[in-house]
Length: 202
Ligand SMILES: [Fe+2]
Image (cartoon, rainbow, N blue to C red; front, side):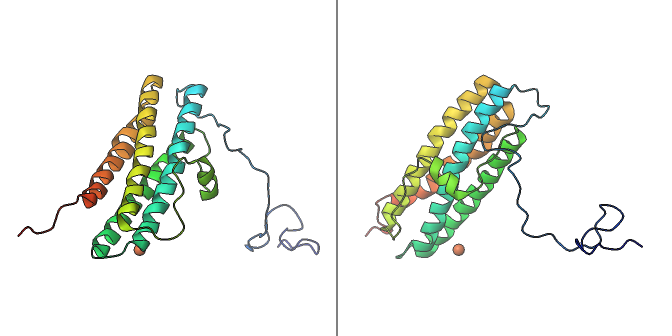
């Protein structure tokens, strides 16, 4: 039976086979793929097309991460007579945005890129204005969400046009079927809460 050496208890004396299942902590390495660099997969899509799609997708990933965070913030901070309804609705929309972020980021990886993962990088890339750290009035919170949606929707429409021109059909389908339609539907549900009509007429 192989024995661990004195100098390295995780190495066996007669080869590189591990002598125990002890995890090796505090490992640090170099980046194996820099952000913005591409890997090559056999997708029959040229480099420029994949690179452009990755850049468009990462912009939308970043904006969607910020919108997700806005939904969670407002889910917590709404108040008043419609608190419970809005509390539930905003959380549902946050969950749906999170699913979109996953689909978008995995599309970036599928194309050979590096998806935006750290929210601090997303904050540098996004064009959605930063909200105050405190609580706003409820209609202002809802308006802020709608403005964030429109920023995303505008970029999604441009990306749909570009990916159609480039024949990146997989990205095009994701943007149209999932991202655009989900955002449009969420706009409707939020916007209905900004209609100034009485609940009951006398
Ligand atoms: Fe919650």
